[in-house]
Image (cartoon, rainbow, N blue to C red; front, side, top):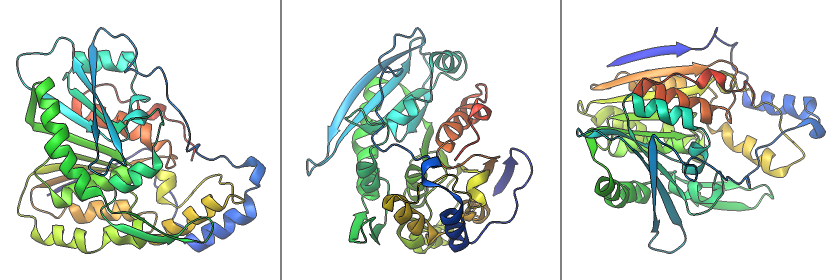
Length: 335
C-alpha cells in the first residue's frame, strides 16, 4: 500500500462550507458575467477524421438491449504496431477525450509506448452526452429535485455498462488490435471518474490502472462514500492495481468559479453537489492507500476547476502511463 502526493504549487486555504459558498456566489456573481459549460457543444474534425502517419482509427457501434442508447467506440491503433502485445487505454466520454489529443501527441505516443487507444462515447457529435453518461457512469440511483423543483430518478446503470465493456467492447477491441491484458487502463472524469472508482470496487481485476479525475463523489447524496467503498476496503484481498486520484486545486477548496445563478439548472446542481465535501477525493485516496495491493497516487492541479480538469487529467494520465511529455500544465486555470 503506497500513497504518493503530488500538487502543482502550494496548498490552498481551508475549504468553505457549501452553504456559505452558495450564499457567497449568490451575492458576488452577476449573472451577466457568469460562464457555463454548453451542454449542447458539438465536435468536428477530431483525430478520428484527420489523416495521421502514426495512428489509424477504426470505429464500431453497439446498441443497448432496450434500444435507448447507442455507443460509438473509436479505436486508435499504432500504424507501426510491434509484434509484442501493446498496452491499452480505455477512455470514457470518447468525443471529449478526442478533443484533448492532437497529431503531435499521437506521434509521441507512437514513438514511446505505442498504446492502443479506445475512445468510448455515444453515436452522436455531442462533446458530452449528459443524459446517456448519467445512466451509464453511476452505480447508484439518484433521487433529487431538478431545476424546476420536480423530483427525478436517474442513474444506476454502471453495472450494466461494466458488463458492456467486459463482454462486448473488450472482445471487439482484441479482434482488431493485439493488446496486453496485463497493461489495461481506464480513465474517466467527473461522473466518468466516479465510474472508474465503482469499477475498481466491483471488478478490481478488470484493469491494472484506474485513473479517476474529479470523481463526482457527491452523487446520490454521497452514496459513493458509503457501503460500496466500505465493502471494498474490508474485502479486497491484495488484488494489485495502480490507482490515480486527480483533483483541481480550485475544486478541493470548493471554489465553483463563475456560475449563472439565475439559471435554475445551475442552482439545482450546486444544491446536489453538497452530498460530499470538496476535498472528499483527497480523503478517499488516503483510505484507498491502506488497501493491500493498491498503489495510490493523489495529484492536485493548482488553480484548476472542474471543467479544465478533463483535459489536464487526461494529459497527465498519458504522461504517467506512457512517458510522453506532460502537457497538463498547459490547461487554463479557470473553473
